[in-house]
Image (cartoon, rainbow, N blue to C red; front, side):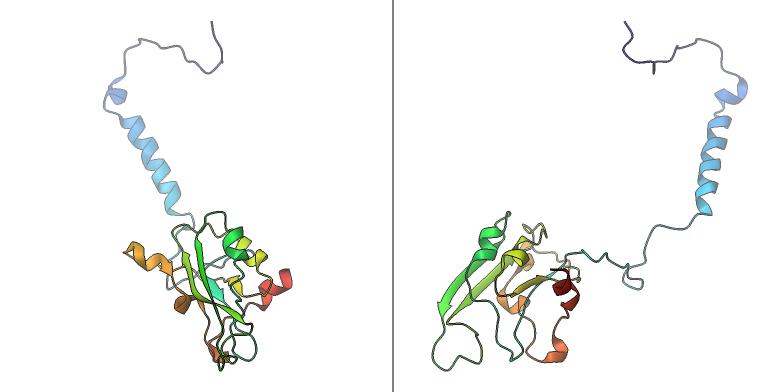
Length: 176
């Protein structure tokens, strides 16, 4: 019983001298090799040549600050709850007197860790945040040799206080 028509009938004919020397197979392989030599290479010479990402690319996370340099994150925990990979860990603390210039609200994230080995860059943390505190930038997450280096702490995620050190996310904000 034949289920498909892909089967071939095997013949027992004698191979010619060139077939025994594999000359047609070698010539066919060389033809394929030479045809690929004149095509455009698909390889990008990173980091000298940087490939453009699409507009919806999601890369490294950043915790944003407001115009006065205060942290936007209020440690509400919605990003951690929305994360399907459970990659975000938050420990909240209350703001003390005299820290109004550091934190916008009365509660702030004392610990904010993201395990990049678990993160699937889905962007649900960004969508869940009511304070526009977390964004996924167009930057590629750096490579490391140790697993512990892939756990990004708050110090690694919060953007700089100075305006020139901040990451521009206006393009992503427009898409929301």
